[in-house]
Length: 130
View (cartoon, rainbow, N blue to C red):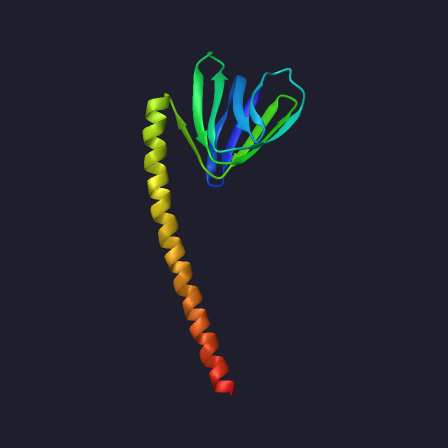
């Protein structure tokens, strides 16, 4: 099977695999090359796959969508971090989420300032019209 895992900014995985294990809204599932076409909504967690050499690979993902069509499997998610072992993945995910939380706080603060500025301008405009 050809696994292609995409996030908005880049392709995280694009390679031949022999097995994929992921978790959907209704539980964990395994895909093998001869399985029927499949569609699943994914929950945040770990996606495992075996590469062509038989090595197990791990990707921490945010919620997303998995589509299997023929021999192609496409996974689309907002955030994905590839790692080699669970311990390393845990540390990497913690660091990434801390960075993401800082960025989200900064973005939320900027949006709040824009909203406040818009409201002040609107109130000033309505006061002038009276």
